Image (cartoon, rainbow, N blue to C red):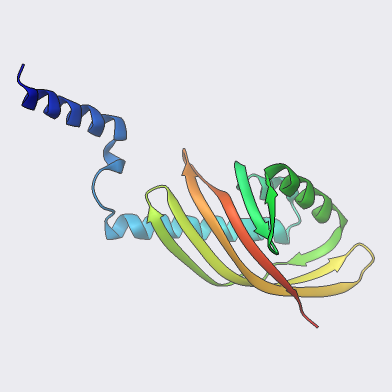
Length: 158
């Protein structure tokens, strides 16, 4: 067998391993479909916060997740603990996501950026509000879009 055939066989094997969805640049239709899926996932995540449904919120977060929360790096396990504890003590949370923009990074990755204005009522009935910005890195894992990274900065609204 000539070397050129080995190269061709290698290319065919690589293409088969990558699958059809991994070949070539993204089409506009693919970009729009990915952006719509991530937009929907981001709003679904917002809805879980509004419902104070910790387990539903956690279903959006990948096991290898980490974030910077007000400049402090937090891994998956502390994030799980923080969400369960905080959601269990609140009477009301309206996350108020606005200015949502989705940047498609590839077939399996997209960045969601937005601003928020959290309106919160804690367990004692005290009300307060934070504003800030958030960045979420969403990755497609199988058929699901999961958050693998986040960055959020919170500023108390006086």
